[in-house]
Image (tube, rainbow, N blue to C red; front, side):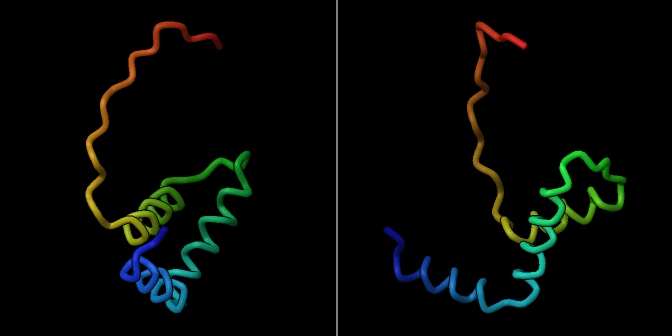
Length: 70
């Protein structure tokens, strides 16, 4: 269940035209998976993701795989 603060944050994000445009950009880019991207497109995508998820990522434990099949 979302808190009232989280609901308010989602409403504010939904009202932002720039955030909606960034999500459109991410969706259209993800649909072109086989398309090779250049450095400019990668930098743009990383910029969009930094705006959408600005907080520092939580440290995660490294997972040691004991049986990997390809």
